[in-house]
Length: 594
Ligand code: ATP
Ligand code: MG
Image 1: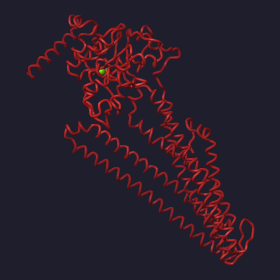
Image 2: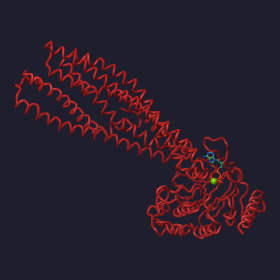
Image 3: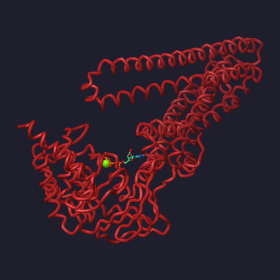
Image 4: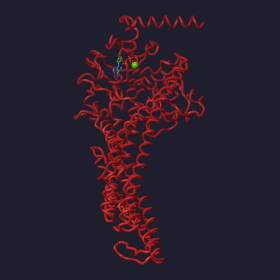
């Protein structure tokens, strides 16, 4: 059985179902031990001896066979059938309920964890918490409770019945079983190690396959299929070896148990036969004894299985608890209040920022103001800190008090959810869900309607592309459906952000894969549609930002200058250089294309 902060309460929560299961288990155990007793009685009767059952003496005959053996036997078998069904439903059903509750709790926790948690933890290992580890806990919860009670009841009852036949024979048959228990524990721990190795190799091979399939285009373009195949072959061989090792040990274990038990039965038959010969007890009693002994084998083996299972379950519970105990470092302060409305004024005041876990300061003394309703372009070299500015406006990371204000409110004084609810963004990675185009665009809407979706897609300049897809707006994107081009992906992400119609819109590198004419169309439509609302466009291409009300030029984590295109071109050396360079490149491209 598993105990711990996140699991113990479920024994109480589902206590009555578990008690019902335990009651069914006890009934099955008691009835199960009636069967050897009946077989013994029939054998005794056949030997023309008076039949003693439950302290009463019977004459052996048809009446006895019908009323004391066959009919009760049928009833016993039927009740055992119902009892076994019941305890399985109670224990395993409850275990699935616990798994569902824990999974819900974990998802609830995971969705609130900050970005820094996801930069440290790989998706693969998080997934294994939600699958392998939860399954192990579920197994341990259901089968663990069942095994513990079954071992206790069936084991005790069988030993009592055996001792009632002959205490000496019981001692001689149980002593070797202690040795079997010790051997099972030792071999069990070896098997557990082999099991872990098998699991480790299996996750290695599935990680490798997953990564190869995701990066298949890169592999093909570098013509590295052969190299990848070789690496896969090595892993595949390793996997086969781990499986063979495990199967060899587990088969040896099973055969060893069978050999051992048969040897103990040999002792029982030899010694028991001698006792029968000496008249200590009857042949029927000896046969019943073998039946009781048979019933005790499973509880003894269950002890070692229970120990192994509990140690696996404890390890999984520890990993799951670590996730549930994870501190959310990006959360509302005690005094935070929800923002009621936002006009769209953003002010950075001498802000410094270093990513958690990193030592390099990526933003230094950043100060600028974006007035409500302004169209602002942010540009600068790659890695200069533009996306970091977006992360901070969205409060993905913590910022120093007094360094970032929305409509004059320090972002530390307002709730994160309310702040984000007034911002819409198309982030740089343009992630789209494996769902229909329509559902992707309507993601922000509580009640999606076709009209809004089409209107936003037209504004983002992607409507015509979507109409060209096989199922139009119902086309499924991603793994199960078509894969869209970089430019289409960017524009679907813009349409999704536009659907939110928020007072602050941020587009991070959202038009880089779009041709200049389409880009102009999108920017013009943004300007007219979003009049009076703040729009921030991050771009490398100067043509994307040159007509904005204001351009912020970021250089190596610092704000190099803020102003209109003409102002920056006149006074910011770096900006001027990059404008000239981009002009030169554009001219060169034109000549090459001509
Ligand atoms: P690009 O134009 O290529 O998108 P950018 O201006 O948006 O670049 P940022 O993504 O803001 O640049 O990154 C700024 C700096 O912060 C970079 O040096 C980058 O390596 C670093 N950085 C970004 N994300 C993290 C992170 N999660 N942890 C640590 N450092 C980071
Ligand atoms: Mg960026």
